[in-house]
Image (cartoon, rainbow over all chains, first blue to last red):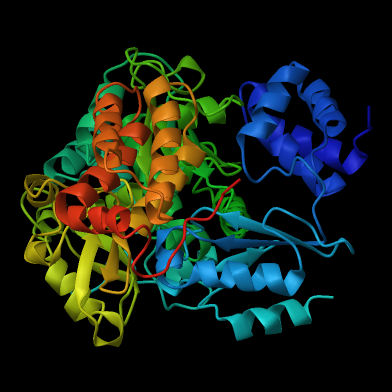
Length: 156
Length: 426
């Protein structure tokens, strides 16, 4: 089993103090662990479960329920392209194909150099500026293939 | 119309509490404390404020149920899990103007008698997480939050709970499960949340925009507030319009604006001068409508009479370029992905329907498929505990009702006339 860093543990305790029952901090703890390890592998989730005081099954069940917890390793940049209806109407599917070609991977995969993971995601609340994507925590709006090329080119 | 909810949209640094106060912020607290909690509750009831997350339940009545329960502490939760596809109306209050939400929550909590509050924020808004936490810290420092707020005997603690990508957590009881660290799945009611909500205590869950409106009701009075909008569903509303429009975006308008005004006046009409084909008035879970429905008012009763719903007021427009079959397939792919799996009709039904819709779109549709789709829809309807499955049915049934010939053409000509394909999804 892995050991969570002091920093992560502190963050978990800070989160736990916000609730009458520390089990409520399980989501925050998973976020903190993901920030430290870049992904939530089964052993990381187990470590979180122990700190929070819930069964491993409960923590694994929660982690696998949510799409923003990465259960397998992801690249340095996670490219999340929205293909829900507003973005699809504005051409997101063509952009998904463009991204797959440009990165040489299929949706859901990571480039061999570990730089980019490509993910198709559900609505990211950017429908007025569709199509849109998020890379890590930055939103990009009114996308075109050329714009995407420029954005990817700027990420080192 | 003069902006009320979005009045701060262009004020620089409005996320800073001093800037917010300088622009008239937190005034409603003084007034509320002067009125007393019962009078605040009565004022909100009198205003006719209805929940703007999609269910449109009278907010004052929801509060009243909770007030009547003699069990403490009580919880107030802002539902900021804005996940209904095509909805982006709450984002300004989560990322730019957070104090408007916090102010609304304090006044609401005062009326309800809640001493604990959470903002359940969707995981997809990381910026909002930072902004809200910073704003809450500032509000604590100014004693707008915490013990004995502004010298009164009212205390209220507030924190942000961050979700991690699950549409169903926007359903109030699933949201509470998720707040308690469990998988976000609905709770069977009764018991109701007014008596047994978060941590077994009386709880009110209100949408962000609903709470934002409360300060304005208190500041301007229920009479002024309810003079805006329609009688059936009064007040101002942030409409998010998207899709094939010249000017998609957020528009604050009175309830009761017509679809035509929304699309042609505010949205600038259909993109590139094309013809309107279909419009989804209130988010993907609401039944789509046609150009014949353009004069319908965006309020609860009018859209209900038209066989649809106002939902979150997220209006998505499809021009003649759109393939309705493709859009229904994509909507179903969403519902299949987001079904929590607890009710069999929803879990299996969305799976079945997404497969059928994909094969119709990809030229492998069978004549009997449309009948199967309808059967599955009727099996889901009224047989699931939460609204997700009910929502999944609407795009299919409304698609078949208004655009059946499009589905039939796909089956007859073995493919999509627009050359689109349904991709395999993970």
